[in-house]
Image 1 (cartoon, helix red, strand yellow):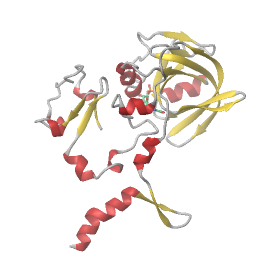
Image 2 (cartoon, protein in one colour; image 1 turned 60 degrees about the vertical axis):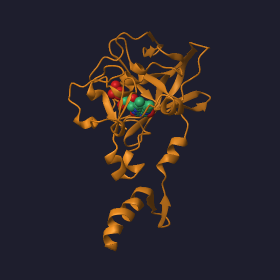
Image 3 (cartoon, rainbow, N blue to C red; image 1 turned 180 degrees about the vertical axis):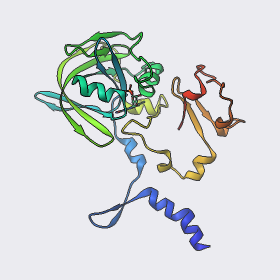
Image 4 (tube, helix red, strand yellow; image 1 turned 90 degrees about the vertical axis):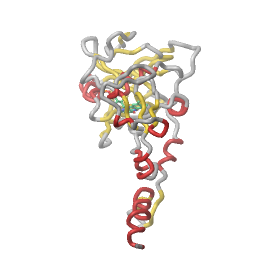
Length: 253
Ligand SMILES: Cc1cc2nc3c(=O)[nH]c(=O)nc-3n(C[C@H](O)[C@H](O)[C@H](O)COP(=O)(O)O)c2cc1C
């Protein structure tokens, strides 16, 4: 009975919340919710050229030196953009405004250039390196030439030297990751460096009984607790009641 209790409750709790520190053999607590307290901005990182352009949403663009001005951008190796930036040696980052349209997150943050032409219909200018720069919902942009690429395992960190930059809109505020998460109810998908598996955040038995799914297009939340039919049992042709997106456009949050 006691052994049963330990294996079902205490051991999983310890495994979830503590890491064995190999240097001093002490248990170190890891509270994954602490990671949400780190602040970031939100950017549309674009790459490619006139023939084939692409872009992805990133919260990991930041300035790393001032003379010369260099910027880091972290890109998952599975992202289509990773190969493009490696091959062309340039990227741009559009600094998004606070009230960025949800289709910008939906298209650039959840779809891959391997499957769709994300630049179609976008307001684009071309930089000195030939990189496409997306002006939609951008208050400014930076354009960089890659001078170093650091392999971080799952991600590549591209270090780019500033080629040019421009303010496009003086009247709007830049979007922060915190605003996207708390006001827009946005989440980060698996390829984002800040993605945290839900099982690390709360008790698995609780999350299994109360599933929540979110539309990646308009951010509408389908909460099993408030509905008569669990999300998983909805028919395949069911559509988002808010924006009409397909069931496959929902992700579990
Ligand atoms: C809020 C948010 C932040 C993200 N941050 C990053 C990031 O910093 N690095 C990254 O590689 N992917 C990040 N992603 C995921 C990519 O935008 C996503 O995988 C995209 O579909 C890749 O597009 P691609 O395959 O066309 O390059 C983020 C997505 C969202 C919604």
